[in-house]
Image (tube, rainbow, N blue to C red):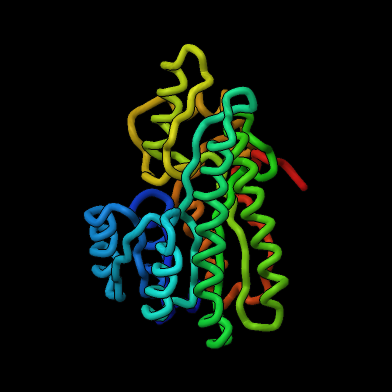
Length: 278
């Protein structure tokens, strides 16, 4: 199916690796020009090079979205790039439970996941409204519906992201700009395996582990715990497997496309059914 994305421009935050990189490359496969964002210049350049090899335009914008003014500058760069599609993918996670979490941990979760989404979106919106067409797609988490006891602050922050997305869709009514959320389940990635290895090595289980975005900012299978064991012990789901970055990327590509004009204000759960029915 032709998603009619050829010639559109997109900014994918946190796209120098993992799920974000896969989203960026999938959009490029559909003909999108892509602005790659990250904090590591070499990693971002490598993704942009792979995208350019597909025959579309690719540029890089760098910056830590939690730093003052950076999110706004990234959005302005996206505006000048001609981005009409915004994928808010960047966002850190850390393991904290109710006993171990401190106010600073909650603050970091919201400053890393909620405020950059708001700032980039808010800054880019005027150009999308003026153009009369656009897409804002946020990346949520399975933790939105089933809060993770070992990631309480992150779960709450991602729930806020979904709430923001619904609010934004209503705010943009009649403008031609839609807002939707994709919530991944457990996605195979090196960062996910590192988290499990660190957890297994920890005797107290109460420490924090900063690891990028849940489900992977560094995607792709790798050596580690057996996937079947992880599914059975951590992520039992009707599909019987863990997710792949490509599962998320194709969902994002559809929502980004003109073919999704009538899809607005939703949370699309791509999680193998782990969260069950509404």
